[in-house]
Amino acid sequence: MALKSSNNRIISGVRQKRARRKFLTWILTIVVIAGVIYLIYGEPLRISAMNIEGNKHTSTEDIAKIEREYLEAHRFFILPQNNIVFFSSRKFKRAVMEQVPGVASIELDGMKNIVVKISDRRATGIWCNDTLLEECYFFDDTGVVFKKSFDFIGYVFAKWYGVGMTTQIGETVGCVPACTNQKYIPFLLAHKIESIEYGVDTQRLQSLNNYVIKASNNATTTMNHMKTLELKKVNLTQIQYVDVRFPHKIYYK
Image (tube, rainbow, N blue to C red):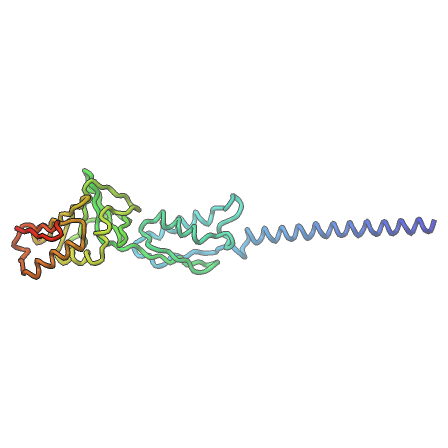
């Protein structure tokens, strides 16, 4: 009887240990799961603010709207994007660049308090579509159309009229590379070119000084020919047009 009673106590003790171990395992599992949930959805890893800086012409509200939508969304329907672990700076940048054409570049600094550093696109010229109603847009030094143009007084930008061409905001204008040539732009300013009819192979440049330059789409050839006329001391204000479409010939009247 004593041996049987001893065995029962041993078996009972083993069962109690197993029960305690199982209970502790469940408690530990619950604590771990609660901790993970707290870290995912709680305050410690949550992005508390995103402050937009640097934009002068781009709408702050447009960027802030994308920011709100992005932080309120979830990855795989359950993982909040406002958590620093699941926040993808690459995807956020891409969303801003795709939805706000006026942004040239974007950089993010910080983790919980993120500073969104914006660089605006700067207008290089104006592109006008070949439509019945004049649709004109600003484009930057890469040729990307980013904003509708407005009327202004005085000579500021040359207007490029695409012959048989149309371009929408976010797209690249058809006059690239001529209209983004960093040497050609000062040339246009020097000759006070107010409008350019840009076709597949040729350009027609209208100067405020009442002469026309008929040119190919090779900006370098055009500039070299006009330089030759300057060296010959041709007074451009007293002629009607200059034809520099051909590699080795210049005609003017």
